[in-house]
Amino acid sequence: MKPLFLCRALCVTAVVLFCAAFTTVQSPSHLNKSTSYYWYLTDNDTFDKFGTPGAEAIRLEDSLGVPVDNNPFGGTEVSDGYTDNAYPHDEWPAAILYAHY
Image (cartoon, rainbow, N blue to C red; front, side, top):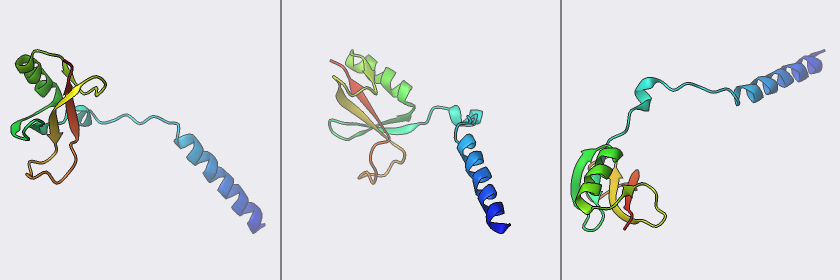
């Protein structure tokens, strides 16, 4: 009797876990905000500003006169975004912006 009960319990658990893997979870609205980074220019690693990737891309487009985005294909790295302002950097960049000349 006990082996049959354990087998059924394991089957029910497996089905529940399998079905739960395909359900969508709505993210809270406060997590949808754009993250701000500490932006450093790539050429000489100097601090540029603290802001969102979109604001930094617009500022770089104005100063460079070319399109700037986070697509690395055909682009030249112009700015790195870090989550903390430590220098020398103790982490990899969380966001990278590329200029398309």
